[in-house]
Figure 1 (tube, protein in one colour):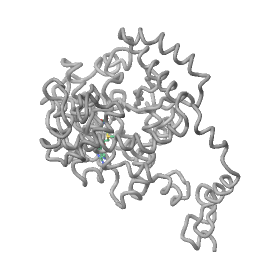
Figure 2 (cartoon, rainbow, N blue to C red):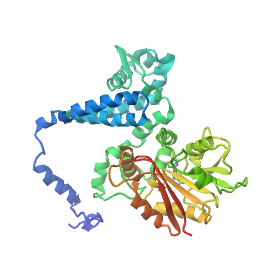
Figure 3 (cartoon, rainbow, N blue to C red):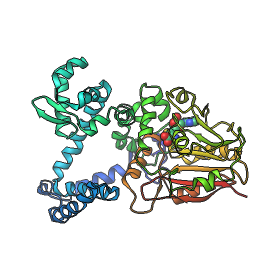
Figure 4 (cartoon, helix red, strand yellow):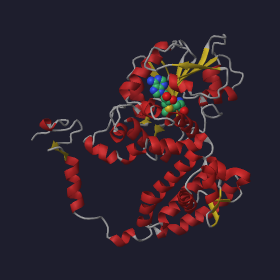
Length: 447
Ligand SMILES: C[S@@+](CC[C@H](N)C(=O)[O-])C[C@H]1O[C@@H](n2cnc3c(N)ncnc32)[C@H](O)[C@@H]1O
C-alpha cells in the first residue's frame, strides 16, 4: 500500500520521509540502529560520569564562592554553571536517570499541589517556624498521610527543610512559591501544558517527524484532544489562563530590561522627537497580557509624555486586577485592524514567537498599516538565538514553543526573513546586551 492510500502525507512526507503501511521510515531506521545494541555496557551507567573533571570544578567553585557571596552577579551565575557541571560529573547515569524520571516530576507534582492548596503560605507563617505536616494537613483539610508523603519528598529535594519527624521549615524557594508570578507556573504548566511536552515523541511519530507549524493542530491538541489553540485551551480550563498571565509576569523578572541603561536607548530612540500632545500615543503594547511591561515603563519613566496603551484579548484585559490608572486598557485582537494609528512605538514582548511565520506576517501587516512613516517604530522584545553557544533558558523556551504552539525562538536570520516578508518593513537594528537576554529588534517602515 502506498503512503497516499494510507491517508498520510504522501509516499514521501513533505519532509522527504517516506511512510509505508502507516510506519514512517524514521521508525524503521530507529529499530535497525537500536538492534545493533547499546553504545556502552551497563557498568558505564553505574559509574560517575566524569570523575576526572571533579577536582578542577571543585577548585573553581571554591574560588568563585567568595566573590558570589560578596554579591557579584557574574560570579554567582558562573558558579551556578560550575555547580551544575560538578553534579553532572559526579552523578552516575543511572542516578541522573532516576532524578529525571522520578525525583523531578515527583517534586513538580508536590509543588503544584502545595501551591494549589496554599501549603507554602501556611508553612511561611510565624516567621517560618517549624511546623508539623499533620497539623498543616488538618488546617488545610487534607488527609494527613497524603500531605506527609508529599512534604517528605519536597524535603529530600531540598525545597523545604526537615527538622524532625514530619516537622518542616520553609526555604526561600518555598516562601517564593506563595508569590503568584512564581507559584502559578507550576500549576499552569504541569496541569495545563505538560502532557504536550511529555507526549511529544508520540505526536512527532504521528506527524511523521515534520516540524509542526499549525497553532491549532500540533502536539498540544494531540495530547489534550482539543481543537483549541494554546491560549484558548488555557482560558477554557480555569484557572490556567489567569495563572499563565502570572507566569508570564514571573518569566520576565530579574532579567535585564530594555528600559534600563545600556540596553535600548529609550531617550534617543523613543522619547526625543515624540509627539507630546495629550492624545498622542507613546507606546502600544500589543499582546501585553495584564500590563507588566507598561507598568514597568510607567515606573521607570514617570514623566514620559503620551499615552500608554495596553492591548490584549478581551478576556485577558478583563483579568487585570491592578494596573496604573494612566495605562489605557484596550481589548483587541491583533489580527484585526490596529485602532491606534501613528504611535511612536508599537511594542510586542514574547508574542511573535507564539506563532508561525504565516500568522506573524498577518500580525505585522496590521501594525505596519498603522505606523506613521519616519516616526513610528516597532519594537520586538524577543530572543535572537545565536548560531552557537545558545543559552539554556532560550533553548528551553524554544522547545516550549515547539510543543505548545508549533512555533519557535528565532535566529537573526529567521528574524530578517520574517520582517522582510512584510513588504515595507525593515529591521533598523538589533539591540542585544548579553547572550541569553531577550533583544530589542527595532523596525521601521522602509523610506
Ligand atoms: C506569551 S504571552 C506574552 C504576554 C506579554 N507580552 C508578556 O511578555 O508577558 C502572549 C500574549 O498574547 C496574547 N494573545 C494571544 N492571541 C492574541 C490575539 N489574537 N490578539 C491579541 N492578543 C493575543 C495572549 O493573551 C498573551 O497575553
